[in-house]
Every structure is written in structure tokens, then in C-alpha cells.
Image 1: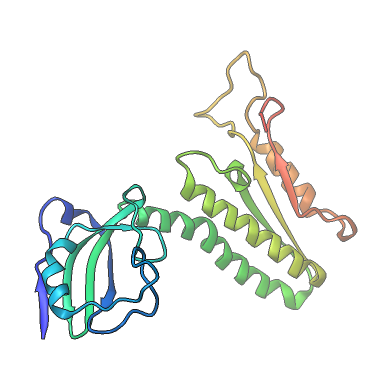
Image 2 (image 1 turned 60 degrees about the vertical axis):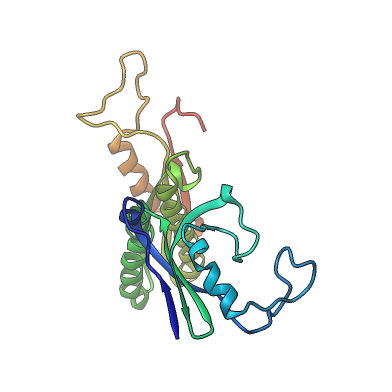
Length: 235
């Protein structure tokens, strides 16, 4: 027998970007351990009790704690919109507040996974020859996570970790791996320095010169990371 409560429709349903589904509990079966609030006693939920409680599950908060018990509304990250009693399993469905999840996943995929794929193919071609160089470009967010910039920071932190791991793995095999932290704005035709702050932006030719210098380093003194910033940049 399957008991079903219809999912919530309306404005909140339109926010369902990342769906969730899981077994909340089982009926007519003693719990493995004492749940929160049971004073150390194991409990068993009857089918009748669960069927009567199904309507109260709609709108229940989902928080980021590992278990379902001990909810804290301040940690709410989602909501239960549907509850089904299927056999002995109480199955709940809902969604997380995740409108920005696809954007975060894309940012990490471009910054971190994209760098991994390119570096993987480059190293496979360089290793048979026993020499080569793989240079990664990072940013201020490679070493400092800023407010309202979590996705970018996660991607750049991951790219820096990739570069460090590859440098330790590939350097003994003749492949020079280096990571560059560009800590500051870059001068361009659309972005120029104010007249009272000359050289307050990174110059692209100076950046390129530093890349070239690292590329030409003898293997007896390889740099794995270089930070570049204008002389007035705080760090």
C-alpha cells in the first residue's frame, strides 16, 4: 500500500532548482538508536501514526545538519514538498534553495576542472620528451576569499592546489609547473590609472616578461609560484 500527499504547488515550487529525495524513516521497525528527544530510548513508529502525521511534513525545513533530527530553523536550506509512505519507507521529496547552484558549478568547472583537463593533456605530451612547462594563471582569489565571491574563490583555490600538486609530481620528471597570482587590476584601453596614481594597475607587458623569465629559469632554481601586484596594492 502506498499513501501519498500531493506536492505543494505555487510560488515556492517554481524555486525547485535542485531537487532532493530520501527516506526519512521506516514504520513498524525499531530505530537503530535513540532519536533526539527520546531520552535515550529507541522508538518505533506505527503505520497509523505516520499516516496521520504526513500532512504535517509538508513545508518541513531541511537544514544542513547530517541527520534529520534536531532541526534548527536558522540553518534552513530547503523544504519538504511531498511525503509518501511506500511499504515501510517514509519517502520525502523537496528542493534546496539553489538558484545559484548551476552558476557555482559552472565557475568551478571553468576555473578548476578546465585547468585540470588542459594540464592533463599537456603533461601527457611533455612527459615522453622529459621537458616542458605548464603555467597557470591565478588571481587575488587564489589565496584570499572575498565576500560575495565564493564561487570564484573556490575555483581559484582549486586551481592553485592543482598547480602545487602537479609541480611536486612533475618537476622530478623534467616538467616545470608554475602558478602566477595576479593580485590587482590590469591596465587596458578601457581601464586606465588615475593621474594621481601612476602604475597602480598591472601592466600586461610586465606580466608577460615575468612569465617569460619563469619559463627560462634553469631547473636548478625553478619557481613554482609567483605573486605580482602593483607597488601600491595592499596585501
